[in-house]
Amino acid sequence: MSDAPVIVHADDLYAGYLPGIDILNGCSMEVREGELIGIIGPNGAGKSTFLKSLFGLVPIRAGSVKLGDEDITNMRADELVQRGIGFVPQNNNVFPSLTVMENMEMGTYQNPKAFKAAWSRIGDLFPKLVDRKNQRAGSLSGGERQMVAMGRALMMDPKVLLLDEPSAGLSPDRQDETFVRTREINKTGVTVIMVEQNARRCLQICHRGYVLDQGTTAYTASGQELLKDPKVIELYLGTLGA
Image (cartoon, rainbow, N blue to C red; front, side, top):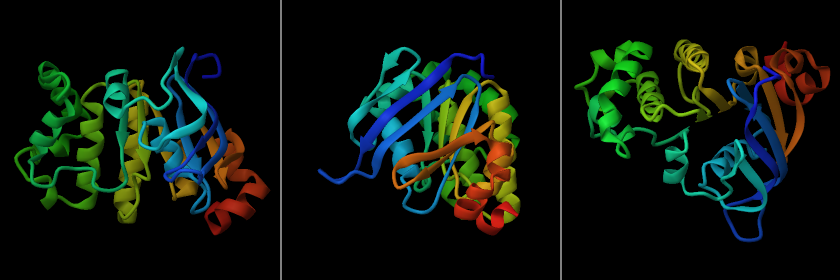
């Protein structure tokens, strides 16, 4: 995959929620087409902030983000969706009063004509959603709601999918299912950038991992290399790396 073209390039990002207070302090990342990238690190390292800055939800004060050759720094989220970026937030990621199918329809609000083909594609990936299509999303289990959120983000057939802690709050079985699904999505050709607290499991499935610490990139290597790196185990994985 080292021969694949770079699809996302974040260079020396400084970003934060409040004026004058940076959460990201020179964070950089290069992602190639078709990669599954895992982002790990301690609480407060800036992992979710980094993902949100890529999607235009946190203002970038310095540095740049490119999608291919296009500068997308601080571009609005709806414009990024049109350009082929999907985002699944950690919280409040479904419309609970709407049915599963209505949630999927919301995923194609920019191009309603794409719904039929997209729903068929998502149904192949998440057959449970077809079975639950008339059920309100708010009545689903945590794992099923995560499927709805991921499915909706995939309805516009994105080139890049951003996942913010997709396994958070799920049972171990549902966590594992989420990681399996993430890998399956990646195998369809979608580039995935995933922030995860379950560092060990994340590094097991990703092609490359980035370790963030205090808002900057501390380490990067293949997932397998990071799993075996004594310094990464000691500082970031702890018993998870054992």
